[in-house]
Image (cartoon, rainbow, N blue to C red; front, top):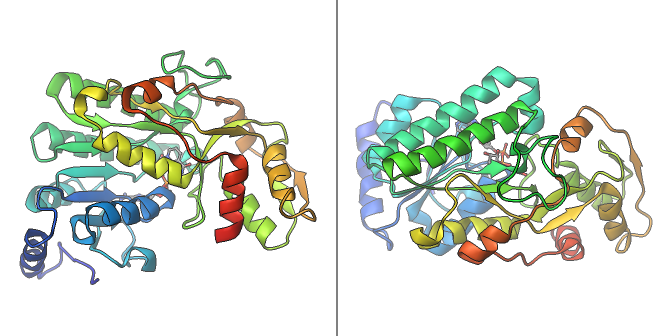
Length: 338
Ligand code: NAD
């Protein structure tokens, strides 16, 4: 599939070509844009959405000028989520129904560049919320994170509604984003849906600078027969989820009838909670020679401010969420597929 270049000198020609194939696709009612598509979540989300709704109906968009090989089975456009004029022009012109906004700086990267993290994480959201408010988008997915919680939040089985005093710039941006999503829903009827993702474990794409990245790196090291040095202490429990569960949850939430989506800030979502020692032991059952040591760095303080486990009963009640992967099943899938 060739790259659709919307904003070059021949834009009108390319737009025309694009319109033709969008008009002839098999799902005329559904046109999906995934903005920030080349990261850990976007790569798998785009592939699953294309399987479900047809490759031509799901446009992947990212800063990267080249479409990654994995996403080459459908349309790709280079688009900066912060370029308000171009994002607006493109979305209005192409008449997308659903937009998944994934572009963001993640927790560890954001701490190194707080000003830019705030700018990217907030401004990109307002561009998309305003487009929906004006009637140009029917439905938005915007991910939040367990980083919205902070050191004063109950750490175990953290409830849907609780104290939220995040201590990282990433968490502050996600909490502010949640408040704005809910505000746009109540004030302007914007159909925005959101999940507070825990740490995500995947083998198709690498994590992008989060505090839970160790839970992916550890499988790469185990598979390579190497020693693993963990940047968190052995007993630091964090909520986690296998990517297949996270992608399924995202699409199930987006496809749920609007009246079932009662939380318009963001849903708690849970599957696993484990420590570095427990994931190590799960891997050792398969690879007995695997070894680990612990050298906590600045990410330890971030992890210490987050919940150890999450109560997601509201998501289960509202739209029927249920996980399929426990830790050993995740380990089996990771070691088999890496
Ligand atoms: P990632 O860093 O792997 O991917 C983000 C993608 O966005 C990258 O491909 C990047 O090139 C792109 N991007 C960055 N700036 C952009 C811009 N200005 N315009 C267009 N694209 C841009 O992140 P991810 O793990 O896929 O996370 C996606 C979303 O989910 C983020 O909002 C993140 O906060 C949230 N989230 C992720 C996790 C996790 O464990 N992965 C957990 C909680 C929440």
